[in-house]
Image (cartoon, rainbow, N blue to C red; front, side, top):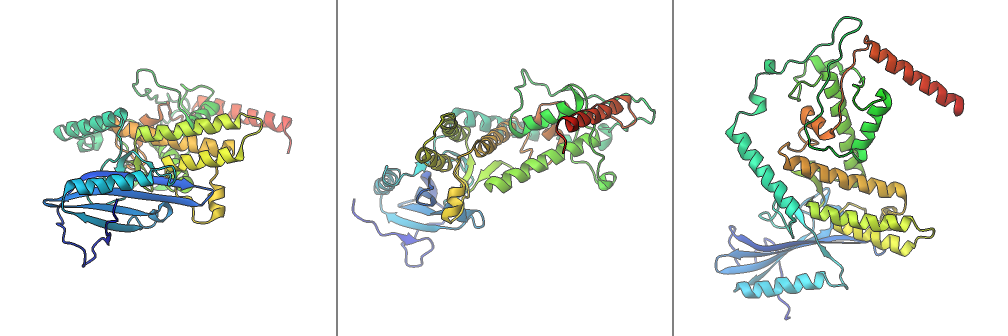
Length: 399
């Protein structure tokens, strides 16, 4: 194919092109090669501006997008016909995705790179599950617009029960979220459930939680529903910890649409590709002698399909290798959290990490948490049992 001159976007010497154009086709590509310290993206689009056409490209290092979403080089190639633009688009796509170059196309529910018109739209092959969730979310939005919102209900309609003053008050009990067959929570949600079970001795028994912050009485609650304020405080704390863990370990960004990687929000199908690679890694870990070359290759494959900010130095790239069970479990929990957020959004709940509504966050946990007053006999029983367990552990494992 003959070379076609490329122009930097907004170059005053470039051929004229209308500001209002249509994105005819697009793809977002990613490559992570840990051995050669390559972690880069390449977005390619076809634009139609009436009688003129262009191929737009946006490329650079994935790491740079964290601080500047507009980082990277943006170039345009201009054509008089759609057929010529498509030929160049396909030629670039084939070159980048060839074994020699190694880029892989991503499936994004919402892209973060490319032209201004392409950002915020889906890219790649969108799987049926993601399409279904998108349709459900759109239907939920329309239903919400057609009926009064929960936030419009006066606060008095949702009274918060105050702890009883007697020595043996009846502990308020919350009903478990209505689901057909709730799967056992996994990842960080599973850890929370284990914590509750450990303290209470039963998943159905309400657990004591810390007192609310001093400003709680002055601040309006962000939750809606009959959650006790102290349960709401615990739930919000758990989600704040999950958010902090996610953003600090993988440099993901919490948005109203989902958990955003440097290149955008992944589809369920794209996340499943990452899970398949993690499964291959797990099988390697089960072998007595795992191949370092295979671990390095599969780690690069994982970051190619699930973009991360890795770092510019070779030392940073080597540190990103998924070569321990701890690193494997961290990536596994990250993917599970991404899937959970897409599923909750699809159910019309919004993003429970982004919107900070304790009621929606509580339901997403799919476990039962209640408040027990410190004066309640059940609370004293749990406290005494916990202190007894700690004493027994100390006898078996003295400092």
